[in-house]
Image 1 (cartoon, rainbow, N blue to C red):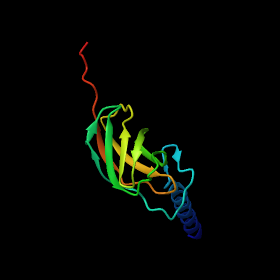
Image 2 (image 1 turned 30 degrees about the vertical axis):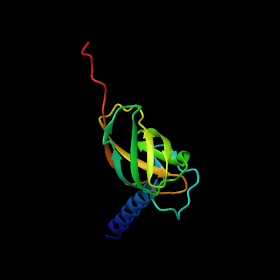
Image 3 (image 1 turned 120 degrees about the horizontal axis):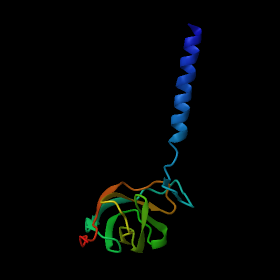
Image 4 (image 1 turned 120 degrees about the vertical axis):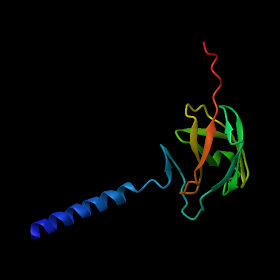
Length: 133
């Protein structure tokens, strides 16, 4: 009976250890890590993306809060690709869309100096019509 108790205790301890170790990554999206995390910064918030769909190389406007006024200090993730931030204020980013094969992606924003990523917003990717040939 004692052996079963200790085996169960070991298994529970192992599961909890693996769970806590794997819950790292609050400051990562894919392979991008904030090079200068400051834990006192608040997470950016995406309120809207306008237009709500677009093609590669289109420019979209993302409105929200908590953005950095230096375009180079904002990272916009379109899942496995990143957009190019061409201008920024504390509440608005102008972003050139990357070439993405997916039809729909989750968009998140990371800001240099913040360990937290923004909320996720769905975005529809449009593709050129096929010529059928």
